[in-house]
Image 1 (cartoon, each protein chain N blue to C red):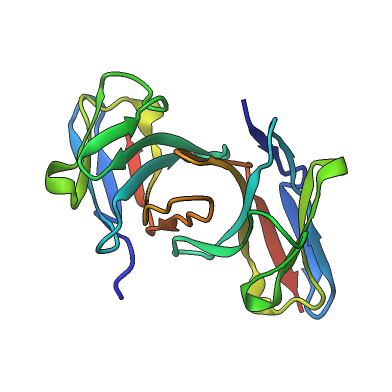
Image 2 (cartoon, chains in turn yellow, purple):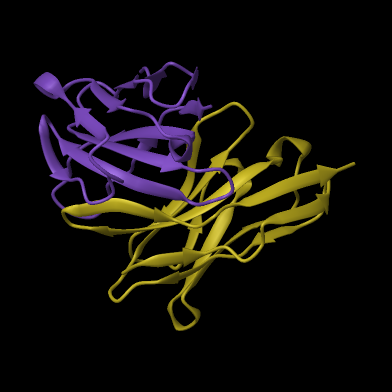
Length: 114
Length: 116
C-alpha cells in the first residue's frame, strides 16, 4: 500500500529565508506526486504535481519540487518565503490509471516570522 | 469558473443525530471524491464516484456513512447516527476523466463537523 511521510509537523522560518519541506513516499511503481497548500479558512490548493519527465517541477507562487526516485522523496522548496506563505502544506501520492485516490501525509504547518 | 463548493461550512451536532453534507463539484467533472481529516491526522480517502456510480468506497469507515450522487452532479454524505469519532473536516474534490495520467483533483473548502 502506498504511504506518505512528512517528518516535520511544524516549521518556522523568517520572511525572506529559503524553505524546504520534506516528503517521502512509499509506492511500488512510478508514483504521481502532488503538493497542496491549505491557507487558514481555505480549501486545498494544488501547488504542483509530478507525473513524468523532468524531475524538477515548477509550481505556482514560486514553489518547486524535485522528484528523487533513489531517495523516494519529493521535497518542496522556495528560495525566499513571504508572510503570505504561512499555511499548512500537504504532500500526496496517487496511483493513477483508474485508481486515482490520493494518499496524503500528515501535513507540515509553516509559520513565518518577520 | 466556479470551484468545488461544500455546504455547510460548519456543523455542530450531538452524538446520535444525523448530519448530511453536500458537495457541488466543478461543472463537467465526472470524478467526485470524499476525504476526511480527523484532528492532527492525515487526510484520508473515503470514496470515489464516477458520475453516479461508486468506483471505490474502500475508505468508508462503517455503515453509518452513506454517500450518494444522484444524476451524477452533486453528492451528499450522510452520517447516521453520528458518533464522537466522526468529528473532523470533510473535504470534497472533483476532477475530469482523462485517458492517461494527469488527473488533478480540485478541492472544496471542507465542512468542519463537530460531534458533541
